[in-house]
Length: 102
Image (cartoon, rainbow, N blue to C red; front, top):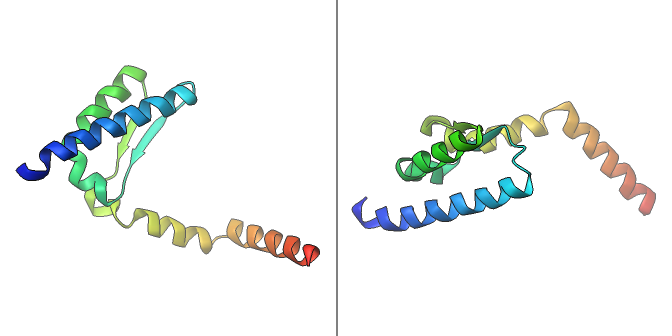
């Protein structure tokens, strides 16, 4: 961990800078920042305090997904989406558009 601490700190600062830019583009009309994925687990000790400070100063909620769910959450969400009615409707609509164009 000592070996990767400095690169993690640099990456965390870049993430915070990018989030600040996106918040400006969104005119700070953001209610929640959600952090998940494999990298979020390793970066948590460095990234969480920086994000928490940013969220507190802008009155934004921070949802940092626990490690037990962080890696599989995206895949599980995608699975739920493709099994749902919305996906079937979108697929049907796309299929009709293709058939009309052919």
